[in-house]
Amino acid sequence: MIEMYESSGNIFKDLACEDAENLRVRSSLMIQLKQYVKQKYLTQKSAAELFGITQPRMSDLMRGKIDLFSIDTLINMLARAGLHISVEVYSIPIAS
Image (tube, rainbow, N blue to C red; front, side):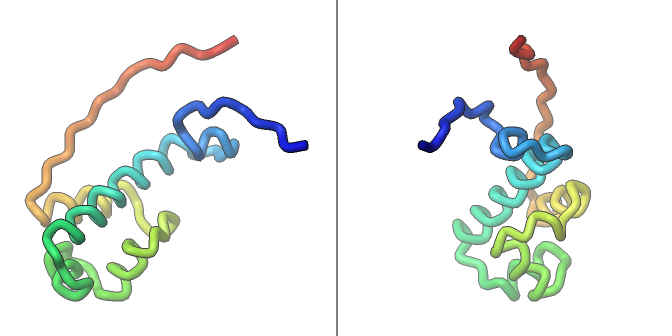
């Protein structure tokens, strides 16, 4: 029998990753970059030039290789594309 649990809304936290919040933020930034590339119909080569990275690095981003990108790198890539980042910090009640 498979046990089911209610999600916390953060898959990384649910999987007990130590850096769950960092992974959540990085994945959100990567999703935004990938969506931008698709919406603008950019090739990996032209997107890489825009973001200031190599084409193989762009391939890593499009394949979702989250462990290869820092938050700083992703924010710099978004900024190079003229995209702005808004940060919101809030408290989540801890269940007892």
